Image (tube, rainbow, N blue to C red; front, side):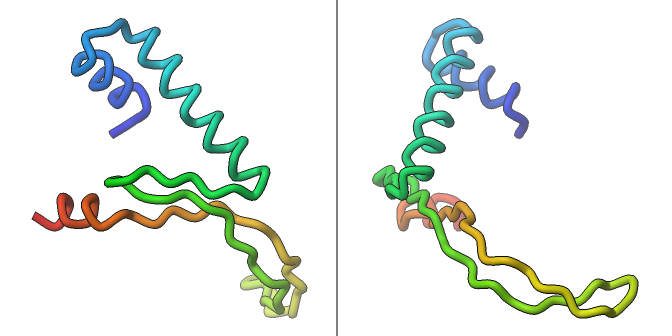
Length: 91
């Protein structure tokens, strides 16, 4: 499902315009980004949790040359599906 298809589905289910659904989805995405940037965890009961994970610096290899390279530490977003969500997908 694409973002446009999701907006269409939300608009139809909520009986609102696609513009309003797009604005609501955009606001949700922006709120999650802002919270994660502050280091906060976002938990949606019945769906899952968004959090930030820290990856350590490590050695890697350039696949073309085989030369060792240093990969710096970084923060990455992480999503963990909730139990109810996992069960719904399983069926």
